[in-house]
Length: 226
Picture (cartoon, rainbow, N blue to C red):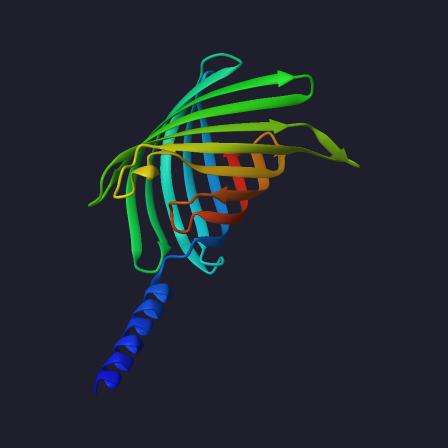
């Protein structure tokens, strides 16, 4: 009887471990990101922007992140711009998990030309208001470098860059507060005409706390001037 009880106990423990592993949120994912922006000049120094974002994840099989928002870009001078934004975010990163957020965003961007190179440094502050969860803040710093190129009559700009994230979120694991995420990206952008601009890029994200946190993504951006 004791042997039978011991065997049943071991089998039950094994089943619990297997079930726990099967339900564990994934650490890695392959995704496709797309963003469309509509830009309407208001004055010589201010533009209205309306944007929509769709990200397909879970091996690019279903939507995992949808966003819609708007803001105004103020061109302070030839080097500096300030952009307050609002985004509503609906995320489903894995089965059984859903996140709804209101994001209040402030961007301060510095753009400098060094010969044919252009350096763009975006400093972003986000206040994230979550439904039924704790609010928190995120600081993001993104540096991009681009350079014009040409293939025959086709002109474009290759670019490379990186972005780091600092989060104020404190949960059961206090290590989540701090520099929690890094992204590395490269791609090309193209100004098709005075009203249409596009980007094609690859992103590698590393994040040891979010699930999934380690992401490979192919992305596109379309910007339309109204």
